[in-house]
Image (tube, rainbow, N blue to C red; front, side, top):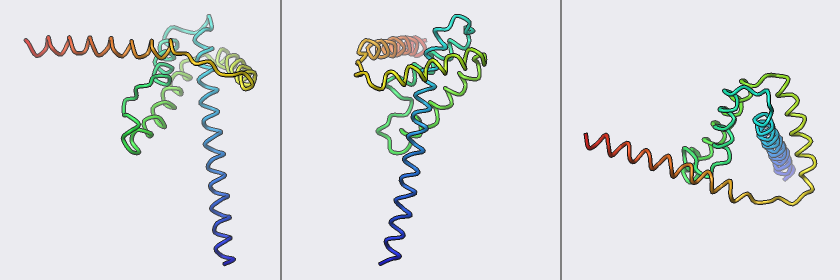
Length: 149
């Protein structure tokens, strides 16, 4: 019985450690997302970094994934691999001084926003869905032209 309780305690400690690590990583992704939004608005950010940020934030905020979340394991691996890689790629394109300044600004924003109620940005979600509809429409038109030739 004592051995059983020790096993439960070990499992509980490992579980708590895993949850704490996941929360820290989610917080880091949230800070980096805010940082990228601030970098995009910065005047000295190069155009290629802004383009990468648009792609990254668009994918991050998009309700549509490359691999749907309903597919077991693979759907979540998509979010666990692609999003951090896009963020990392975008960060590599940003000058260090701009990045540090915007990271501090993002940290301040997150600290002040924790106590405020969150607003839903339906217009932004609508904009993303509209973007995908336009892309799919042009893709269908292109495919029809290719098959009719």
